[in-house]
Each structure stands twice: as structure tokens, then as C-alpha cells.
Image (cartoon, rainbow, N blue to C red; front, side, top):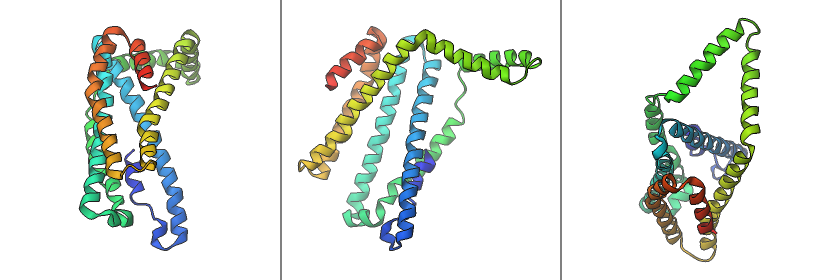
Length: 242
């Protein structure tokens, strides 16, 4: 994530006057964007799993709500940095070179995050599962070796999919529809407003207000999901988006 983000602020551009460097920068930008997106998806999935393993069952949804809160705080901080740089240096400087600053400045929170994550302990559930797998694998490996663990893992995945395929299908569909609706609201909606004549400052203000609303509602919605159930809250949220 850190490499994908900071790297985007260091790529060469066509404005350097060298067309070859411009092509190289374009290719690097695509690769770094892919790395950034892949890393973000991996981080969100990992922290979601971690929270489900360490959080109390009665506080699970409120724990997951912390992801939405911290993600939106990060987006708000990034938008503030972009706004401050544009105000301080001017639009011409931003177009010429200052657009690189937000990407490079991401190095600071990125290093802090890496340092902080080194001290996060593994969940009790993960350690217990790891111990069971190691003890079982050590006994079986004396006879047939490493292939047993591969077969055991594959068999476990097949058993989970066979027993819970419908729940997995519903959950995947729900997440996909939510992602599409969020894209429509936050990304396409702001692009539409910009094309409709809204100024850049007003467009950013609309985005900031929507993020603030999400911050305010994240924990109450998490509490409601803990009380009435996740499915009901997702249904209400999807209907609200529509």
C-alpha cells in the first residue's frame, strides 16, 4: 500500500519533455494503482477478519464499524491535505509539480501504520487453529509428507463451500450491490455535479459532508446491527441508497 501510494508521486510525466519518460510514467502509474487497490482490498479484508476474531460477539458490528470510521477519517485527512496544498501553492503549482506532495506525504502515516501493526498480537482463535494444524500435520507428515496438509486444506475449503454456498452467495451479492451503490453516490455523483457546473470547492464540500454523515452514523448503525441483525440493517441501507 505504501509503495503503491508514494510511488505515484514519483513517476515521470509527459510534462518533463521526454516522451519516452512519459510513456514509462504512464505504465508505472497503472501498475502502482493496481498495487494500491490490491493492497487496500487485502488490508480491509484482513482487518475485518481480525476484528471478527478478537471482538466480543455482542459488540461485533460496532467493532466492524470502526473500519468505516477510520477509512472515512483517512479520506477526510487526504482531502484536507489536497485542499491545503491547493490553497497554499495555487492551482498552477498543483498542476505543475505540487500534485506529487499528497502522495509523498503519505509516507508519514504509512510508516506510523507499519510501526503500529508490528505490535498487534495474533488473535487467540488464530493461534489455537495454528496449533491444531501444526500438531495434526506433524503426526501425518511422518507417513506421507507435506501433501497431506494441502489435501486437508483443500478438503476443508470444499466442505465450507458445500455447506454454506447459499450464504456465501447472498453475502457476496450484498457486498457487491453495496459497493456499486457507494460508487454511484460518492464517485459518480460528484463527477455528475462537477459536469453540471458545480465548482471544485463546492464539489469537495459535498464529498466532505457525505463523509461526515458516514462518520456520525457508523457507530449507531453498528449498534443497530448488533441488536436487530446484520441482514435487516443491510436491507434497510440498500433501500435507502436506492
